Amino acid sequence: MANIKSRRDENAEATRAALIQKAGLLFAKNGFSNTSLGKIAEHARVTKGAIYHHFDSKDDIFAACYSRQASEVAKVVKKVTLTDDPWVDAINQSKAYLDISMKSVGIGVSIQEAITVLGWLRWRKLDEEHTMGLLTQTIARLQNAKLLKPYTSTLLADALYGILIHAMMSLVGVEDKKTKRDELMLLVQDFIFGIMTESAKEKLEKY
Image (tube, rainbow, N blue to C red; front, side, top):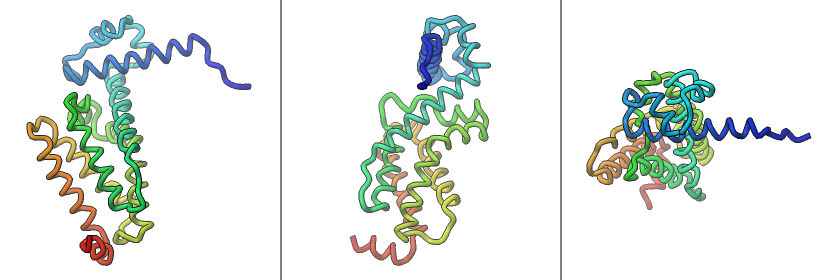
């Protein structure tokens, strides 16, 4: 028998989603320290008691906001149309990731603040839940095509992840984001090119 949700469960999920959506906007606009639970409750049109029904603390609702944000970022990267060339796809996916910071509305909660509030380990766990799978797939395609030197896939995915995270962080507050993004993309390309086999490099250089 199918598991049918009760109206109470549906309402609870809707309330939680509304809290995360409103809280995310406030955290992105005002920062963590300048956003109170009272203000979140006011904007979500619920009581503070309703917030504590779903979250243990302001840190927890902030974590939920960042997790939702990371999920949206992953969805954008997943929309990149894949080709038969894993090198081209890796570059296009990296560009799609960095392009999120190019939007006029920004990326929401900044990575810098997320790390400060949540701590490195908790932030990294949340972010990896949504992005590391994509990076692992990207590296696997490059490896399956015999394009990479014999490093472990975990090491390569972790290295590319670090470059992309720091690249996105460096775009925050930059006026000429396009020029900065283009420079960062060259860095990403140079990194991937540097871990490729000599035969793969020769093929690329002919294009």
